[in-house]
Image (cartoon, rainbow, N blue to C red; front, side):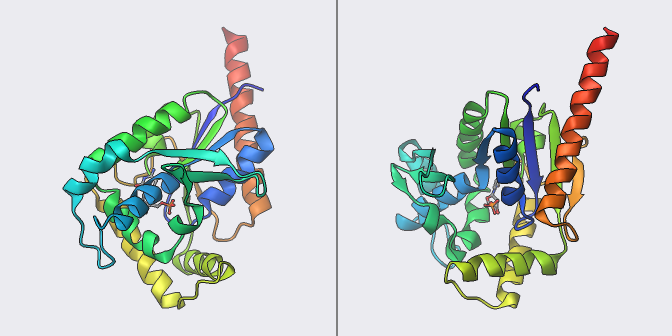
Length: 238
Ligand code: DC
């Protein structure tokens, strides 16, 4: 089967990465978690005092430091996940904290940060056979991706999923706190100037409020096989 590029965009905590990983595994594709890249930059900025817990940020300092921020992925031999490395240090654990979740949308409004991340993503995902998830993949990073999904789900369900994810890692918050943080992040992602979160015209909406993981995977695999069928038909007509 012909390999394609799959772009998954959508709101925070809609299960984009869960679906992207399952697809990559099923299809033997590479998975690129673009949110992890913005999170790693945020962690760097926080560690260096360029952004504080209260959200006050020295954007110029972050931009000036960009040349010394190296981000890459490497497969974790134990978990088989693709872990993110910041200047050769595995920061997978640090970047999933509530602190980074709260600050990342702000850091990802910086134009120069986005330019650097997008360039990296285009290099890493340049070959077909790749699944990327983020906010601007189908609209900006890979506008010619053969399959684009736009994921959404009810707020309560998203907050509950994120809460479970935190508590499985020993981090405890109230549902209200998680809900508030999600809404703030959506607002920042939707309203930023540089490549905000919007559905690409040709993206398929996937509302997974009522769908389990298997059902979502099945839905997307069906879309892919339909795509392949259409492309075979087109070829036979030429
Ligand atoms: O998918 P995530 O929750 O790990 O993403 C973290 C943040 O990074 C998200 O709130 C906005 C930003 N982001 C972005 O601006 N563009 C992307 N392609 C991916 C993430």
